[in-house]
Length: 621
Image: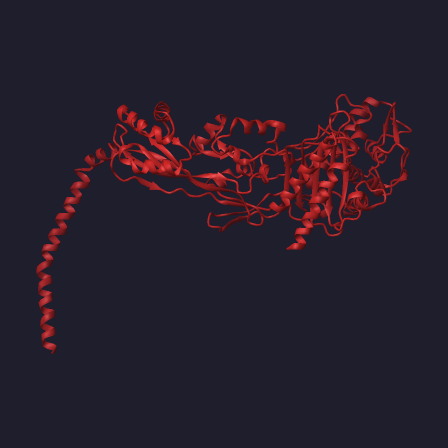
């Protein structure tokens, strides 16, 4: 049995030795042929390749989604089908025939279609004939494809806002590249027909959300006529998602609180009341939990181009302005905590300062009235915050400027341009540490920076007016950052809307961690005195906000504010606060401008609704 197997192996070896020379010769000939093709024929291959051109159709990438803290989708995409015409020059007869065939099915005149087909831009391979094609239109094109040269169907993502106008100013909208920014976007790789973020997070996180467009390259001959070869396709890459700190349930409560309160005031005949803002922050992280601005709009208005009626609605009352970030308002008595802290820290007053309030203060020839013209008598700091006593803070302001009512400066001009300015600058400087007169760093475009007015020409009453919030203007986001820092022990946190960035598949790419911008240079003991005064303002017998918060199940501390709005007889209604008093979780700032009477009647009840809704939600979950 072994001998036959041995003979078989010997026979196989002989066959291999016989075939090998033929294989070697064949391989050598093949290598020689390849060398000839690579060297001798290279110029011919190059000529052939250069004679074949491509038209490129950009395939828009789906934008990343915008989701709230609970995973609810605020902005996403929906597929739409477009009927396009790929450039097909030097064949006017074919062009005319295509337009003639399509006119009826597409519901457009032959002349209109021809105009679209001949007005293609030199930098783009195609023009859109129908942006949102119906099933019947798509069916017709698919069935008659052979007789419609240059006509194609492409699927593109279109922005969608599943929750409508919820958090519209936060989310923002997308649209065509503005004419004045075309060169900048083209230099950064954008096509002139791309849709980009134009406001809100859509603008702020444009590069994150945009993704990378795909491309379909269509071979054409030198005349630009498509060739019957396969196209080269590079798929688009979807943009990354952004997940917010914002809670859409709380956001809806804040937005509805604004709408309801403004409607209530207008129902009382206050026709000048038509706007407002609310901001809610986590006092320990700076996370923006809600940000409402009224009037508002629908981001979907811009999809496919905004109509004239929608654009007019957008312009009415400046509905596109995010008043929470870009609005500036005189703060009224919510300024008084900053005034006291500045004076305490600079040692121009002591925590136990007592002022005898008789209803106002005579400063030179000018008498500055307190809101309570009967006066509160002898009053200390915490009580002055409780009842929002103006006279007390007039006196604090003058003390900051080293102005003695009983022995005024001999040279008033020198005082006006010296100590008075220094006192205003001290308020301004501490305001910067709280985010009132410096940018808060909120991750939204268009933030307005608050300021302190250095009146020119100066007057004796500028400084005491500044002490009660009549010479400053702050944004609601600045006010929220300010009260949060008072609540958390002096840590100024950067307010953040975005919590994390995730890939299209949901993989976490980046977590935005809380960022402490600075520790306010104020002694903890001084902050505690202020907090006690704020708790008295919401629970004391004469507290300006006790009516709303005195029996509230949530122990809220806060301060009301009334400031002249610029319209005679109208005031800004402001409330800032935090809760709970002993273990703060959230801070809130609420503003409604142009109300009559005292400010607490407009802003405070809105704040109460939002705070209560937050803690009900916490208890529920």
